Length: 264
Image (cartoon, rainbow, N blue to C red; front, side, top):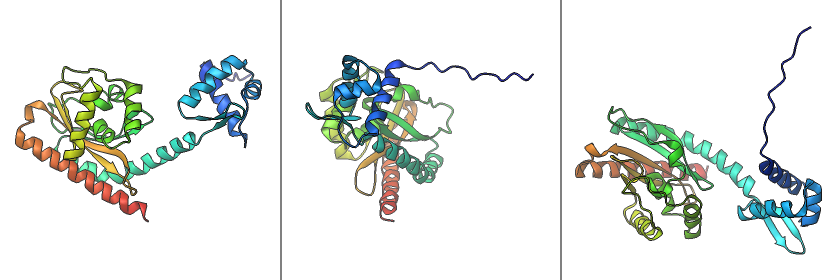
């Protein structure tokens, strides 16, 4: 008799499972739901349900319609799904230009977006130079304040959104050059807006310098950034200027293409 192997049991995280259950219940309702009814439907005690739903409200996934009315699902999940689809389209649009920039400069180039509060590298072409060291992508996720890709985006966000991202991730000191004060970061972001590009001056990795510029969609909103990383050993004044010009030009070319795509 043939034995059928059982699939390994999946260990669920209880709090995550319960939060998803709450969102699924709310998604099936066309009107706000009171806390007691929500707790009963989810099979939770009222106190536990209140803590979970309060967290979902704080993160923007659930809306509090008022004490007497209860809770309802927000559009944030739909926004995230749309953003994920948008990011896929962006990767297709930027790939050719980013690869060309990589081949022309022979340096490491990348394109990043902010997903929630995390900085995500969507596309990267590695350096052709043996002396270059690539940054840890996991470390970069919470390092928008210490990267050119991150600062190129942060500089153009509404202040409240920028502060939310910084508050969520903190201002971790990765090197002695990392900006670790909010006032220092705000001043640096002002400089980004004046020059049109961001600079990571050994702020994430020692001996690595990076230049980044924002990408804008058809509405003019900043949706990501492109950047080029170079080792400090090649960072002469003339070469820095060349890299900055190249990054800004590439970002403008891609933004123009995104603007045209928006009206098709």
